[in-house]
Length: 174
Image 1 (cartoon, one colour):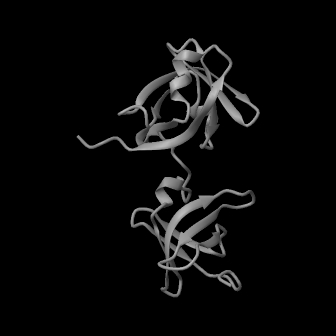
Image 2: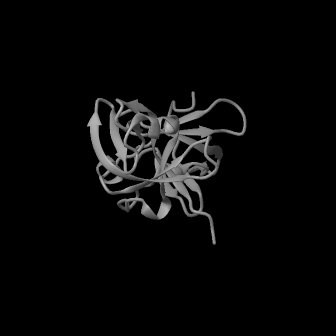
């Protein structure tokens, strides 16, 4: 049996009050689906040898956080040990994305190549500052390259073959 691939959807940053509620910093675009009451989530924490399955019994937004409670976790003592953990979902439980859109984990590790055949490096992160995403590319040597994810720059993404084809706009590598 192959190992389940778990995908990050949030960080459990702290407890909230004394009734077993936790503060979660979301790392998903699908808060309403991912943190829905009744859904199951996996907690991965360095203090525990394997992921802990938790069922969400309540969920509500609060400032920049999502506040969650879990079934069977009725007070702060039940959840204190989970602080600093990552909330994950199984890969097969991910939301189906529209065509030509990808999860960040699918992009990480892709080889980035220019339309002139030059290998720029490996895609190591995706920044989401606002207007458009930015690919962070680690070249074989030198400092990271930042590429705007716009149609003029990113020409093709092939996650199956782990390749991203880009066009370098004038001034982008200066």
